[in-house]
Length: 305
Length: 242
Ligand SMILES: Nc1ncnc2c1ncn2[C@@H]1O[C@H](COP(=O)(O)OP(=O)(O)OP(=O)(O)O)[C@@H](O)[C@H]1O
Ligand SMILES: [Mg+2]
Image (tube, rainbow over all chains, first blue to last red; front, side, top):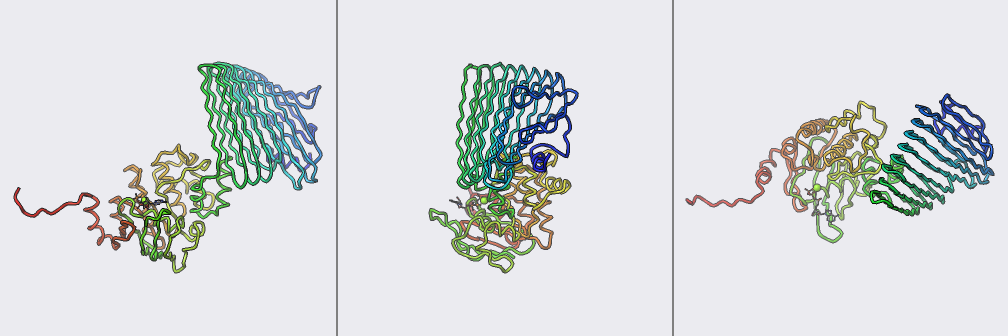
C-alpha cells in the first residue's frame, strides 16, 4: 500500500495500521488486501468490479471496513459492492473513500453500494469522503447507496463529505418494509468553486415504517449545493426530512423537498432552513475573545460535527 | 479602573437612550447597577463590551482609551459580559462553550466545578447542545458558567437572577462573592434583586438614560428600598381624622 492510501485511511476510517474485523482495501481500482471473519464473508464479483459481502444471520458486534483510495490523477474508479445482511445481525460497516491528485489530472471514485438487510437486523453504516492533493485536477466522488430494509430491520447511515471534493453527485435510495427504520445523517462541506448535489428518495411500504433524514451542510466561497429529498409514504408510517444549511461568502444552496403521502395514516414532515450564521452566535463567541473568522470556523465545525 | 466619560447613544430612529453617562468602576469589588426597566442598563453594558458603539463619549480601561476597540479586542483586554438574553447555537455543546470561553480544553474537574457553581450537574449537562432544548433557567446558568470560565479582570453579569430558582440562587451568590473578594477583579452585576443589592460594595442607579445616583451601598440602598418594595407613589395626607 502506498503512503497516500495510508493518509486517506487514517482520515476516512478507523485505520490504526490495521483493521479489526473483516475488511477489503481498494487502491486505484484494485483490491489490495482482504480479510474475512468468522461471520463475514467477502467474495469478489465475477461479472463486474466489486464485492459481495455476506454477513451471517445473528452476527453480532462485527465491524466491516471497505475503504477505497484513489491516490493519483487519471484514475476513474467504478465499483459495485453489495452487502447481504442476515436476519438478526447487528453490525457496523465503514466505507470511507478518499481521492488524491497532485498532477492536475482528474481523479474519480464512483461507489455503488447496495444493502439488503434481513428481518430484525440492525446496521450502522459510516461513510466519510475526502478530497486531497494540490493542483487543479478535479476530485470527484459520486456515491450511490441503495437500501432495502426487510421487516423490522434498521439502517443508520452517517455520511459526510468533509472537504476537498470538487464535484460530487450523491444518490441515496431506500425501500422500507413493515416496522423498518431508516435513519440518514448527512454532513456536507463545499468551498472554493466546488459543486455537490445530493438526492434522496425513500419509499415506506409497510405499516410502522419510518425514515428520518437530516442533512446539515455548509457552502463557503463560490461553492454550490443542491439538495433534493423525496419521501413517499405508502403505508401507515412516519417520515421526517430536514435540510439545515449555512452559507458564507458567495456560497449558494438550493433545497427541494417533496413529500408524497399515499396513505391516510402516512405522517410526513419536511423542514428546511438556509441562511448565514446568526450574527448573535458570532458576537457571543467574539465576547470570548475569538475573531470573527475564528468564531465562524468554530460554529461551522460544531454544526458539521 | 474602567471609566465611562460622557457616553451618549440614541436608537437609529433617533430617541436618546443614554444621555451623557459618566461612571467609574473600581479595579476590585462589586458594583451593582439597578434602575427601572428600559432605563439603559443593558445598553451601557453592551457599550462597555464593545457590542454597541456610543455616539459620543470615551471609554478608558486602566488609562487606555478603548473606545475604538472592537468586541474581540476588548474581550482580550479582560472584559467579560454575560448576556441578559443568552444566545442559542446550532451545534455548540455546553462543554464547547465553556472551553471556548476558557481558551483551551477544560480538565474534567474544572468543568465540573464551573457547572456546580451555577447549580448544574456536569454529567447531565456537559454534552447537551446550547440550543432551544435547554430551558430558560438552564441556558441562563450555562451563560453565567461560561463567563465564570473566563476569569476576567472585569466581569459584567446582566440580570443573572432572571429565571433562576431560589435553590440555585444561593450558590450563585457564593460565586459572585468569590469574584468580589478577589483583589484584582472588578465585578459589575445589573440586577433588581435585593439579595444582590445587599452584597454590593457600590450601587449605581440608571434611570431614563442617566446616572440618577451612585455611591457606597449603605448610602444608596436606603433611597432605593422603598421604591423597590413599593413602586406606588404615596402622597402624605397629613393628620386629618377620617
Ligand atoms: N436597538 C434598539 N432599537 C430600539 N430601541 C432600543 C434598542 N436598544 C435598546 N433600545 C431601547 O433603549 C431603552 C433601554 O434599553 P435597555 O435594554 O438598555 O434597558 P434596561 O435598563 O437594560 O432594561 P431592563 O431592566 O428591562 O433590562 C429601552 O427603551 C429599549 O427599548
Ligand atoms: Mg437590561
